[in-house]
Image (cartoon, rainbow over all chains, first blue to last red; front, side):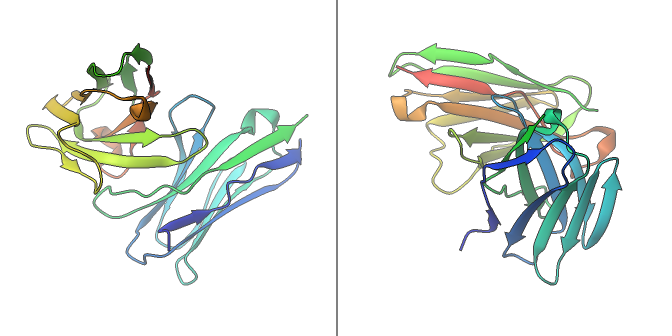
Length: 110
Length: 117
């Protein structure tokens, strides 16, 4: 079983749609739950993260973690064409050891 | 936010030669740097973790004699791919932690695309 499972998509939505991106993980020792956005041929950039269970909102983005079900979500409201990228979930242990999901390729069509 | 640079951004080399990739934290001191490899349409795979002044810790399956990592200062780490082969062609990305964001946020460089002919 992979430590982190993420549907690679691709996912295509119209502009303005609400996007839901999800991951599951297997190791309950993960403490931080990061979301990265990666544009083609670029390094990942940190979008946001949560510590332990709960929600965190930043503008149009909301990250959710449910440690009881080992489920991670990222919601994007009012999606824009500029949101088109690959989104990677990355649970992290306390010691900076991070495991990436496969990444979901998102396209937002104008 | 913290800035991490990589050089070169892209390199083409012949099979059997060695290639050095630099990773620099430009506006903070990086206590730890990480090296990842990413194949097309795949996720990042951690290769090794390095702390300044100490030997790198390699992930299982990564040959430490082939991928030499040197973390000589708090702002510079280098990855040398020795005796490169076509199967080493990949996108290599470094990241760094440190600075005022604490030790749990990794900042990534823009990546280096290596092509071995």
